[in-house]
Picture 1 (cartoon, one colour):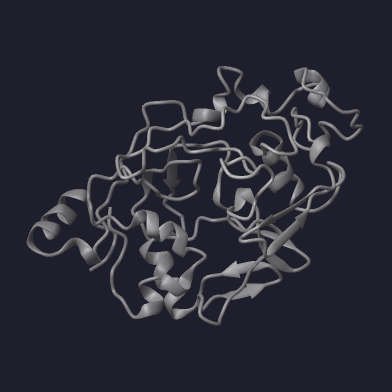
Picture 2: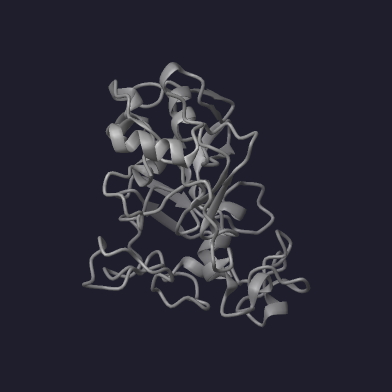
Length: 293
């Protein structure tokens, strides 16, 4: 059975069989709110992050004298408090020394440093952040506390990053071993093995690892597209085997990811993680299940 089925045909199949091995197309999703979502920044919009003139000075946010302010992506938030600071993520195993200038030619400038200028609650000012998730969460989430959005200030000890997903120049991705049967070509991940290519057909490979010293590395922007919060477009020429169209997502994630899905057998959120964690995929474990919405 091919994935390129219309929603009506797929629903009919689901009615007669189990839905565990078919992709129930939700390619017609149309977000009712602005795609920038939380990054509308209380109406400031693009200029809250990208100051057209003067960098952080142009936004009235200059807290340090930084001659490189605004030289990358017209960045309008002050990053001076983050320069040269060390964060250890992934249980402390992945140590990142942040760049000392916006002109550093490393992927952690645009892929990590700029993000932390708003999303760090330790070294950087909280800026406009309220340290509370913007989106409405499904009932499957707990209600004992607000979901934090500031790294280094998540409710435990201040300055503790060990509970964060690995990120930075030392957070490398690799092929082989217990993971995907992919290949890495000078830092570019190619999902062309028997199982990895089948996963791309069943879901896709939407993440965008950065490249540093010939290695694929994880940045914030590997998983998150900071400009689109709630929808992902699969084009007709996409390598993804999902039907072309728009799919719901959350948290600015780059692929279909909808924990609000009403189908309790939906595996789309697990599929997102499996893009990098092939060892827990259906394909690498001999399974035939595809993406279920």
